[in-house]
Image (cartoon, rainbow, N blue to C red; front, side, top):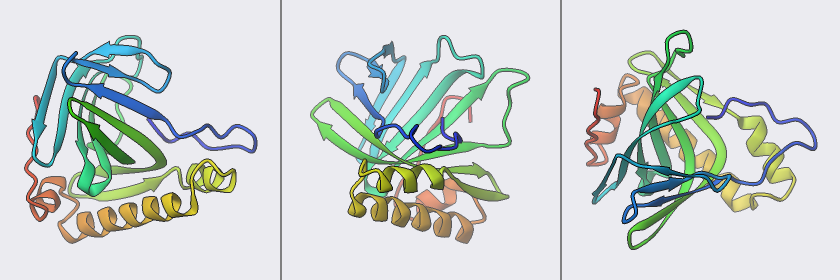
Length: 178
């Protein structure tokens, strides 16, 4: 999850994550492959649901990769005492697909949605530091900002309701616990 503040000299390269539908694995940016309980491919994107072993803050996650929107939309199942004031976490990403393998490259910028209330843009400092360090091209940084602005505008226009905003794009998401 984002939220970390970038400091001079500590900015990391873009995080790349792999989603292997055929083998039901999700490989994180550190190369650790985790078992996925459910993958679902839809015309508009990819759904995954999996436990998060070793995470103190949350024990499960559900995500949708939405390539046309440049988003990974995640619902974290927080452990008691680690709850956050959020309903959805949206990573700004590029998504590539090669048959049954999907790959995201995280473009640093994130959106935190509190349904019906607000959306917060976070990690702008990381995006700017990465672009300044040459880890993103100017075009990628600009595209990340455009994706974020479009999402914020769309969410605001629809009462900060993710489902209502996505419906305007012909997208209807289904979740295990919602």
